[in-house]
Image (cartoon, rainbow, N blue to C red; front, side):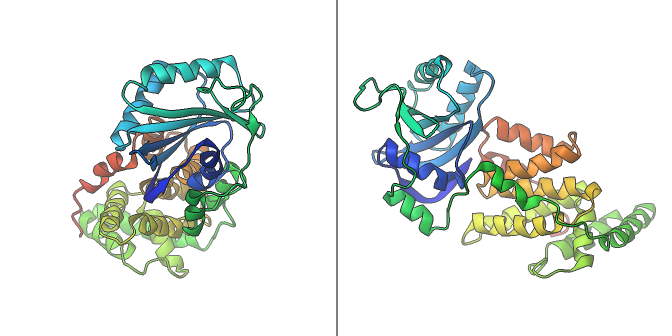
Amino acid sequence: MTKLKKEIQIDGPANLLATVPNLLGFNPEKSLVVVAVKGNNDQVVVTMTLDLPEQFDTDFVDNLKETIKRSGADGLVAVFYTEEISIELKSVANLFMEKIAPELHIRDILWVSQGRWASFLCADEMCCPVGGRELDLSSTSIAKAELVLAGRGALSRRSDLKDFLAVTKIDKSLVPLINQFSKQKTKADHNENYLKWGKTQFRFLSQQKAFIDFDAKLWARLLFGLTDIPVRDALLSHHIELAKISEDPSQYLTQIAQQWAQVARVAPDAFRPPICTCVAALMWQAGEGILARSALDFVVALDPEFHLAKLLNSALNSGMPPWEFRDAFIKITNPWS
């Protein structure tokens, strides 16, 4: 789910479809895109991208409805991006009208397939022929222009987003430094000085100028520090709290996530799950749900049972808004700050 920093107004289905790639940051494929809007001018509140489930049941639709209501929107446009249009999708559109329309104003339910589009709710053959109308992504609207000026361009495919955490080349110089921090923690645990050890890690890892330049020792400290749950959770809480008082919270969180992603890309495999999961958490809180999912894909490939990654996946799959999950972090008591 992406929550916009400024109000964007959508005018008509054709302009909406041309704007969706800029709202999401990529051209959607095989997915359901929900644009939640409010007011008489259809101002966009949030956009959601969901993988098409094998079956659209009432639970799925009810969860979607509650998520949109919690966002503060009073209506929505649903767009199904598919390889082919089936009778089943028409039934899903009817289910949306039955379950959602009584509480939220459904502006439209559209389908996009093989470069063509139409509305499930339009019975006018002149407007929405059976074979659909040609999809023109090059058309310009005020909303699209504003998003482009704000730096929200669109990549060609969702898969293009997945390289931001791909391993470039593992930095072997990090391994002895990580081992050094591991020995320090073992010694601290043995002497019951854990709180002192944790305070030291937090002090180094939360400093304002951390990771601006390459610093192998600091990067190794981060990789090992994030394997410790109290240190990890305290750092996430710290940055989310700072974001709340920042001029641009999303930009602040995205910057931290990008800095940590630099470290993850050269990290040994054993230390990638914690830092990639943290990148996912920060991206999600920044409103970049697609990048959060991409980060979690890296984690699942390495460790399908990593607890925080499973928790985040469940939250994303349920359509939980990031601001609800945020409370779980900011309520964490941080003994070191």
